[in-house]
Amino acid sequence: MAARLAPADDDQLHHSVAAGVWDPGPVEAELLMQADRLVGGKDAMPCWWLTERHCRRRAIHSVGVALQYAGALGKQANCQTLVSFGHSAHAEDLSGRRRAHLAEGIVTPTKKAVSDSAPIAAEDILAGETWRLITWRRGTKRALKARFAAKRVCIADGAAARAGTRSYQHLPSEEVWLVGERRASGEQKYYLANLPADADLKTLAATIKARWACEQAY
Image (cartoon, rainbow, N blue to C red; front, side, top):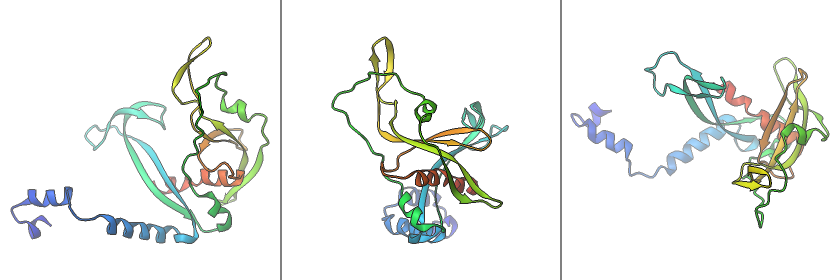
């Protein structure tokens, strides 16, 4: 491009690309249309996912490689951290998937910050809830299913404040869904979801499990 459009003037072409004065709207609209077309269009339930992935690297000269925290390893390591933003959708069971749209987080403001109890662990909160067997999709060999339970909670990640004899406790923040998953292997997992307060358990499970699309992309 430089040889054809700006011979002997690469710097000028660089500034044209890096600081363009054109309106990016038409290009963004075209990209959005093509993305919708590739993953099912308006008739499929879209899931937008933002995720990170840590790739361990022994070499130190690759782009972005540094000693940093790697979530997959649970410690600091020499790795690259990749951030991906994607869009996916499934074609089957559209009536249920339309209800699983990703909404803005629901925030419950309080008139006065109050911290009158200690935070409760996710496992304890869901211990007394009803756990239901949910099938979220059919895999290549069998239906994928597990037991789920959910409850609306306020995350204890607000501002730190004194609470009686406890020196610093984080105040409640936004209200979200706490979702628990019990697998047949005995493994338990917990998730936070900002879907609407009227979302049903099957919608919560299906939306959480929609993350498998990003693993396929990798």
